[in-house]
Structures are given as C-alpha cells and as structure tokens.
Image (cartoon, rainbow, N blue to C red; front, side, top):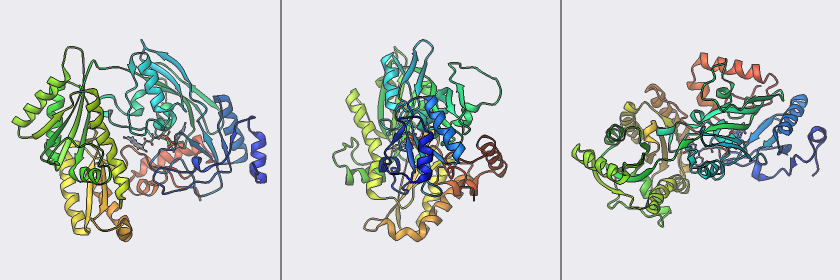
Length: 469
Ligand SMILES: Cc1cc2nc3c(=O)[nH]c(=O)nc-3n(C[C@H](O)[C@H](O)[C@H](O)COP(=O)(O)OP(=O)(O)OC[C@H]3O[C@@H](n4cnc5c(N)ncnc54)[C@H](O)[C@@H]3O)c2cc1C
C-alpha cells in the first residue's frame, strides 16, 4: 500500500497487522448520496488494539470514523469532507463473549452482526428482540450507536432499552469498562446512554451487555384491512387492550406501497385482493396456553364489529408468516426502485398521526403532482413518509421543490410535537434539521458534552453536529 507521509507516520504508530486496504466497501453508504474518503482503514482485533489506534489518532489529530456494517441511512459512517480520516472498522471484533441464559444477558463484541447476536440468543433458548431488515449486515456497535428501533420496539423497546452496559474507547484512547450485567446501577452519569445514539461522535463502542427476553410460546401474524390511519390507530388500541402487552409489531402499509411492490417485485405475493388503500400487519407473541390464531381471529371479529376492519388474512403457517413479513420488508426496496423525491423518518404522538397524514396530504397536493408512500412502525408513532414523482415523471424534475417539501413536512411534524428523525439518527444528512429544529439549550448541552469528551474533535467530526470551522 502506498501512503502519503502523514498517513505513513500514523501507520507506523499503529499495532502490527491492524491495517486494511482502503477500498470502496469502507466508503459507501446504502443510499448512494455520499462517498467517503480515508487515509487509512484499521480493523483492531481487541479493545486494547482499538484503544491504541484511537490514541495514535488523538496524538496526531487525525479524525476517526467508526464503521460497523455500513448500513446507516443518514451518512454517519462516511466522512466525505475535511481531512482524510482513519476508518476504524469493528469487523474483526465479532465474538460473543458470554451468554447468561438464566440472567437473560449476552455479552457481544461490537462487530458481531445483529443476526449473529440473535442466533446466539436463540441457541440458548432466548431471544434478542431487536429486529430490522438490515440485521444480516448491521453490527451491534452500529445499532447501538444509531439507537436503532425496528419492528419490535412496541413490545421490547429500541436498542437503548436492550443495552445494560458498554465497553468503549473514549476519544482520549482510554478504555471505559462498563460492561455490566446489571439491571439496576444508579452510580452517577450514565455514559452508556451517552454513547448509545451518539453515532460514533463520543467514542468507539467495542462490546455491549445486552438484555435477552424469553421466546413467546405462541406467535401469530395477520394482515388486516382498515379504512384509514385513524381506524388503524383505534385498532392498535383495541389490540393492546385485548392482548395485554402481547402485540409485538403493528405496521401500517399504504396502498401506494403495494402498487410499488406490484410494479417492481411482482414475485412478492400480495394476499389481499382487491389491493387495500390502507392495511396493518399485526404480530402477536403470547404465553403458553393462549392460541395466537384464536387471539388474532378475536381481534378481527372485534375490529369488524367496531367498524375498523373490513377484510383480513391470518397466516396459517410459519412460512406464510414469513411471506407476510417479506412483503413488508420489500417495501423499502420497492421505494428505492421507484426513486424517492424525498424520504422522511418521522415520529409523532399517536393521537397526532391521523391529522398529520390528512393535513400533509392536502398541503403536498397543493405544492405539486406527486405520490406519497406513508408506512412504518405505527405502534411506535414512527412513519416513513416518502414522496415520489407522479407516474411518468422523474425525481430530478422535483429538484427545485425537494428542500421546500421536506421543510414543510418537518415543520408540520415538529409543530405537532413530533421528531424529524425517529430511528435513523442525524448523521450528516440531518445536521441542518437538528440545527433548525433542535431546542437551543439541548444543542448547547450537546456541544458542551462533545467538547468535554472530545476536545480535539477527532471522533467522527461533522456527524450530528456540524464540522467545526
Ligand atoms: C434495509 C434497511 C432497513 C433498516 N431498517 C431499520 C429499522 O427498521 N429501524 C431502524 O432503527 N433502523 C433501520 N435501518 C437503519 C439501521 O438502524 C442502521 O443501518 C444500523 O443500525 C446501523 O448499523 P451498522 O453496523 O450498519 O452501522 P454503520 O452504518 O456502519 O454506522 C452507523 C453510525 O454508527 C457509527 N458506528 C458504527 N459502529 C460503531 C461503533 N462500534 N462505535 C461507535 N460508533 C459506531 C458510525 O460511525 C455511524 O455514525 C435500516 C437500514 C437498512 C439498510
């Protein structure tokens, strides 16, 4: 590998054998909006090596960009501007260090993929309930650093709720040992919580203590047709009242998304005919003795009697349940195939959602001819509100309108007490939104925390907070 003198000098200070070839795999992100740069890529084998790498970077004032699976959707994992950073990849720290089935705890290194962690938990008869479509590639360090959510937040909470402790390398190069297996530990400021969701700006997570959950004895999945988002929300309330905490997922799906699927993934079976305007995918997980099919049938009947549900289908086998989920998980891919003008990962108080969808639809219709695919984790108040060109038109034709459209949507969301970034984070894509919509006192506290922990500003500069000038 040929290096420039500065990178060569840094390379000489790194532990032997940590360097990797700088290749596009470390510089890309899934939406293709940004392409990164790197002077060096280092992949430490253990926390001591990771600490040595960060210490060397701190001494030489070289930025460090932590990299997990690279699946982040807001550009936090690549640094296209400023001095060329060292990319610190966790790909070689993949061990499951400990499994404590009776405690419901797993110790996993940050480079283990979410799927590996889920499989390890299943191997001892437990579940690690965080689940999202990118789980085969996304790593534990990445999902914690973005505080990822996924489809089971309704029942089990997001990554933060499932993390009991972390081991991390701080920007000084010191190792923070906080890998506790404790559910209770009130001993001062919670640095674990600071690192979770920090998108690599306050340190490198090298391992985590994760909470496991029992596997429900009975599971079931249904697709139910609802008249409107309002009816879907009333159905959610009904489902929660009937299932006593047993609803594990409640996903809203719009007819527009089903059309996109039919156009671009005709092989994905759509069980509901005619194609509904709105539907929900409901998953339940129940204790032994409560049949999931019967519970879902009961929900269907009660929903129909209340005028909320007009049609539906309950999965008759594990394979059919997987097909239902596959349909839901193909929607983002179908969106990519259509090509969005703008995508929004928003959350709202549940009682504001129906009004938002109604008002936003009317306002956008007055701004231009476009299609809206509004879908997502309704049970968490989290919607993916994505805009697409009208049939026969291309997204480029909306270039002049894009910024205004997103501005209007975020304004409507924030005015209703919602968030402009529910689960993907801020990264580099939404630093402007954070500056625009963030509470000033909260932003000042965030800058103070960054300054205190990373005075030289080497950890992922430009992510969350703008690059210092
Ligand atoms: C198809 C698809 C579906 C998705 N579905 C969901 C969903 O349903 N819910 C949801 O919440 N998200 C979803 N996401 C986003 C997902 O949460 C993130 O992609 C994932 O959590 C990031 O993990 P990663 O290992 O790929 O991290 P990367 O993309 O590599 O990094 C993400 C950020 O974390 C930082 N980082 C990574 N590892 C570390 C570490 N060890 N220490 C410190 N910082 C680190 C990076 O610097 C970057 O800022 C989806 C993404 C895709 C592509």
